[in-house]
Length: 145
Image (cartoon, rainbow, N blue to C red):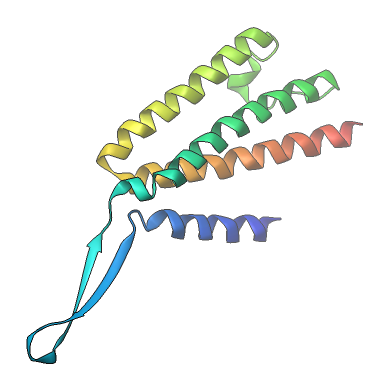
């Protein structure tokens, strides 16, 4: 599992590190000299990827909450000291989780305007982290049954 996570993280960082789409144009100029030009494409072509990461982030946060409640109902305990203070009150836990998720996405949308790479890498990293958290929640719950 650790090797898979390292490989996936590396691939994700490489894809996210590209930032904008780069196109290569080669054409003939005077005296038959070849000239190559690199040009950055508009950001709208890659925003689908950012939106997919954002939707995945929201989904993983919801699954984290559901699997946490399920695990707690089957005898597991919350190991996150911050979440432990409010997770016993489900409406409060849902409100805090939703608020934190929306706040992170809002902050990243603002950061994306100034530095796209940082926003993509941060959101990709959060997806990997929450994917691991959900995987752990499922593993713990399965071991309890």
